[in-house]
Length: 234
Image 1 (cartoon, rainbow, N blue to C red):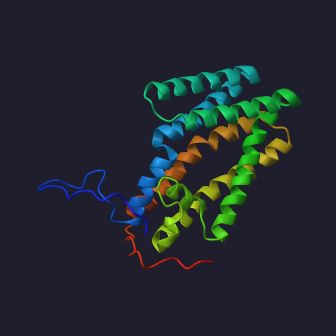
Image 2: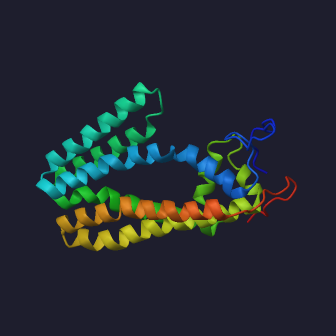
Image 3: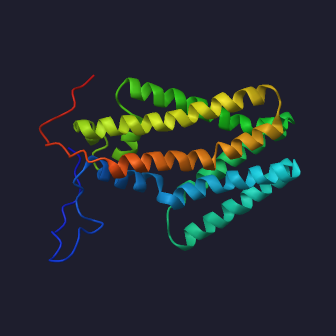
């Protein structure tokens, strides 16, 4: 089974602290995903530069202005992370995404190509997530295992596997929606519509996904299984 550090029992009149061992699969996955994704700050660092780029594009239709707005937000996030001695991986991820998009658009001269990397990325992620679910090795499980000393330990608990399947399917649905909406717009050269769809399917869809995932993780009460009850290999 998945192992958490054992902490002393709370004293009289005190509830379980934040470091207390989890009692349910949902609590365990919630903690692990929070660490792997960097919490709300990590999601903000990853999404804010893209949001700044899109707002700049909608307002000016100028790629350089939009990239400048995105870079400014990235630098603020990066400096804030460094000042607090926190990980900069989410800010760096935003820098790479923005750089690739700007490079492609500058080489082709087609403004809609700014959105091509995002469409391709969502399509690739959809394939990977669907394949992982078919093999019953859901991607979310690897996010859980990435913050433990046993990367595949989550596979030994049926409840964790089932929950990770649901969460992986939730993320897969978001990728499919983005591709289904944005690919036809890209092929039609509808740059403004692409920018609007990117904005609508960015933060709102992310918040919706987080709310649904939160409902699954907060309301579920799946007990962690004993160590000797393993998930059968497929």
